[in-house]
Length: 454
Picture 1 (cartoon, rainbow, N blue to C red):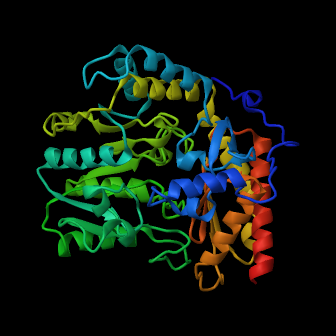
Picture 2 (picture 1 turned 90 degrees about the vertical axis):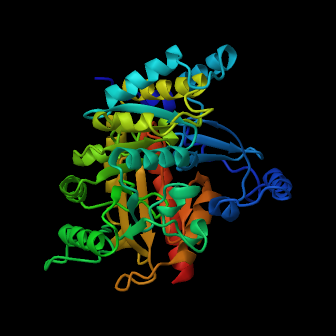
Picture 3 (picture 1 turned 60 degrees about the vertical axis):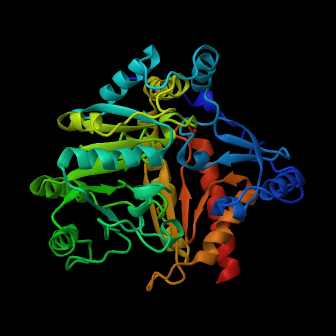
């Protein structure tokens, strides 16, 4: 078995983080951001809160236009799972950038090698593959496939899941900032189990998964027309703040779908390719979905995604005109194949699980130590910290979330905000000492924020 070698990703923590400007963002970052804002619109919340302009990255370190260097706890928002500019991935892309950049959906050797490898690493009979250039496109293709496979047209999805920003993918989410005033017909929303904020509990106070499934069954009878093709959901919610299900949820949901002739569609654009310690996050619960989407870390930064379908539904993919202009181009295939090979060759699934234990132990006392920390959660290298005004009411503390995010960033930690929930997605190649340093910066920011706001 391949073993992780921390020496490949060593960071001199006596020099990193390294903040060289008097203010952050620095003058060059501010000037570039001002120029960009003359034309760019719709910037993300993390950019608005800390408008730094990045210039380069290597492994777990990012450098901005002013020369400030940061530990990366965002992976380019869940993308550079193997760190920035991994040599094997960069060389693979460069090779095909010089040899063959696009051949539509004609066969190339690198594409064949990629799809064979994807079929090899995924569980069960998930072996029918189509390649795309964005997560949203892969999700849309999955919805069309589900309709073709079942002859049904409706979908169930969960509140605060995120599946993309176009067409039906938007209708799977219940967030006005993405939806506008209305969603497409035939899309129904369900609550999903949240162990920190359960809707239904057992007498001992623990979350009652069965009550959620009873509600799902009632919703099918009361709201739908009996034409539900699939339930679509993230194994762990990303945008909503790394919200993780109880361990019995997906096995029970799998049975629920099978008993009702509904496909289980796992949107793993964010959670796959080692992010959660397995090739698929849903593998953590020994469940095989009927349709799965891959992305973000799939190409470690190169825009490549995939929709994968179980063998019994393969013919449905032929019915939906599944190919795209950019999906599966040689550069994309090379990036994805190289990324998979790096994970295998460097023992990174095992290292991601080891980092999970490090992070879990590091955050274990935060809820008792800090009045504003209501909950911490971790699966692999996907983390969340929920900040609250009062632990009894669990009222979200958005002001604290903003403050902690900005303070930690100013200390040299690049990461992701989500309102009152702090999100972290460090690269799975990160050495233990760098992971501990990043957590130190976050904890310092939490302590400072608590002193200021309480």
